[in-house]
Length: 206
Ligand code: SAM
Image (cartoon, rainbow, N blue to C red; front, top):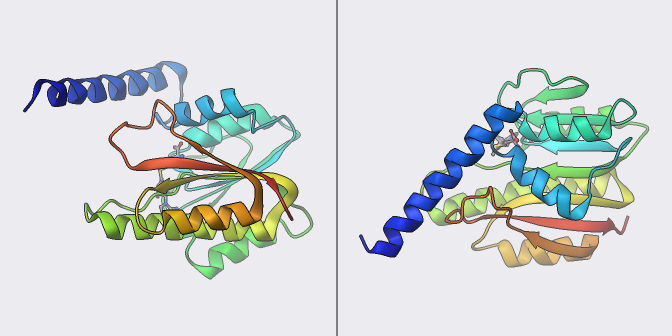
């Protein structure tokens, strides 16, 4: 291994440890909390009193951050395939968001209201086959975008994780038709070697 490769491997492990240890100290359930906190520090997406949907929420690191900020006047509805230990003041649906019945449950919870923000940290189980992982990631992102078109308040925002690769450019185009502004974010807690990045759509056209 070349020196630069070995030192970047060291740096990656170092960063991983840093965020894992920090999460333990700060009482967050996952190191993912720091990705959202960094985006929040820059973009001020989440505000007190907001209604937020968190797709792919387990184990609950993002839910903790969101629930803290929206406070008791806000609302957080989360969904994940996996079981998630309760987070105070978060409504949780356990199930596969690709299934119609889970979408229907979400729509029923917002029968007479809309969300101000949708966040999606959903990621497929990584198979290691790049093209297949990317296709699945883009599909999950598309489902999130579809939800925005059903439930988001005009002017609202969507933060979504996507893997770069085939289908990414088309998804970016789709985001641009739905939101006035679309930006990319790669927070420091996102492993540098990972192809994951976040797209942030603001100003939902409605
Ligand atoms: N944001 C979370 C946190 O802060 O703790 C971490 C999310 S983790 C990176 C990705 C999550 O997406 C996993 O918990 C996984 O179960 C979920 N997921 C993947 N596919 C899903 C699907 N089809 N429906 C619901 N959740 C899904």
